[in-house]
Length: 413
Ligand SMILES: Nc1ncnc2c1ncn2[C@@H]1O[C@H](COP(=O)(O)OP(=O)(O)O)[C@@H](O)[C@H]1O
Ligand SMILES: [Mg+2]
Image: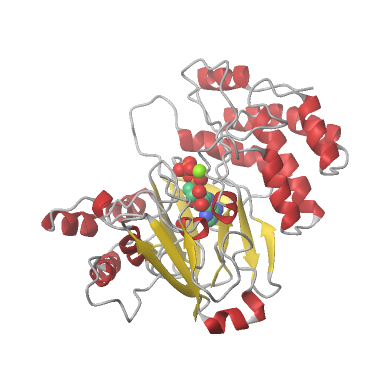
């Protein structure tokens, strides 16, 4: 594993025990600058560490901060062809092979290379995966387009993508001078604007999820929630600038899930109190604590139920060796507006509750984490429902969809 052109350490995996190993590179540990790279889970010690408690779908047996680097879809033509000719499916590829495949292309700043001294009898074919990854990249240099538009996005999508999350999305880089776009994993220089694009593929449904997400983005940013600048491409694709690619540099990021080893699918750990406590542990400035409160209030009121711990992240400032809350992302109406949900649960609980959350519940957390003027914040956000309706109407989201969403928004005051 490498970061900022330095070797961080070596990862091993025992398929039988479904346990992983991590050993820091001695030089990395002796450099004070980056000691805070993994604030939790991976200890700052020279001895090899064993991780045998993370054998879940989310962590796949890896140390959670490393598991953050695994994309959950690997749609790619070259990889698919290679798998077929080797009679394999993606599931049969080991996690180390998957990391080798991620290589230098992952989200954030962590990079993975096959170790030079792999044991000769190794059964996992890490070098082979690294070779496939090179082929994928060579193939990708052929993809692109003249401008950030629908045709170019489709062209690049065919070559495959590797961002995490559920829906179809791609990473693209737009040349600031020429406007030409290329796949997002080839370059990270400042000559390009780096986007993550959620594709509005025509699925036959009568409304556009990306349009709704864009209307939420416009509303949330107006209500004081910091997000990366985002736009709609050709009226249907939601493009957001990447917070892990800024000023020509890779930014090291971790999700709350990966940083703390809290499986985002485990309701026992999915609590806003955990998120606030993590922020305090990281010594984030108080303005970040308030930002979490504001996002929480927004998610409740605007029915973004899918606010799980992989949808909250932190960015590492390497020159200060400090963490900050990342810009908000995946802020949208998470339910299907064509269906009637009356008892949908919040993914992350508040004051022990996932449904029927009230102003009092929010105030309990405000009190505990010393958020000033919580009632004012909550009122401002609730008044923002009108702001959303204006945006949604301007974007020509169908009236029955707007009505359905309004109906399921939560008024807490
Ligand atoms: N602006 C961004 N910059 C960098 N990474 C992002 C950005 N937005 C989302 N991501 C990353 O991509 C993943 C998928 O994006 P998300 O919006 O959560 O999609 P989904 O709706 O599929 O969950 C997120 O979990 C996050 O790690
Ligand atoms: Mg998400």
